Amino acid sequence: MEINNYNYTNFFKFIKSPLISEKSMFIFDKDSKYTLIVDKLLKKYEIKFILEKLFNFKIIKINTIILPIKFKLINKKKGKIKQYKKVYIQLQNKRKLSTFFI
Image 1 (tube, rainbow, N blue to C red):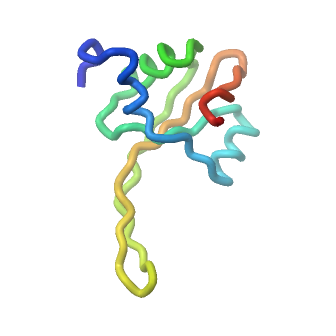
Image 2 (image 1 turned 90 degrees about the horizontal axis):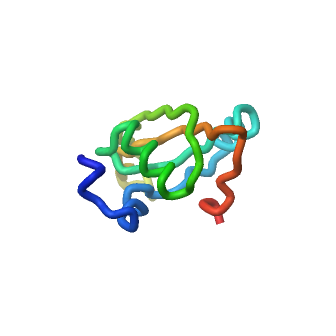
């Protein structure tokens, strides 16, 4: 996936949502890292480029993990949770990403 092929207005389709859970809030309080869910096909440098262009801040560190497919029982039926990519980002000078979480 090449970054140069896309307009800046299309970058929002690559960021699925912020991940808000107990673990992500603990990591935010401890290290001030944000947790996001992004498109599986993006690489680290593409994620960094997209976030820096969209929100105008500098990213110090970025960690990614692709979570496997999970099977769960939902109302006595077998259900499946899709595979997704989770990203931890740390901003320079502990800046806030409050506009994204509104």
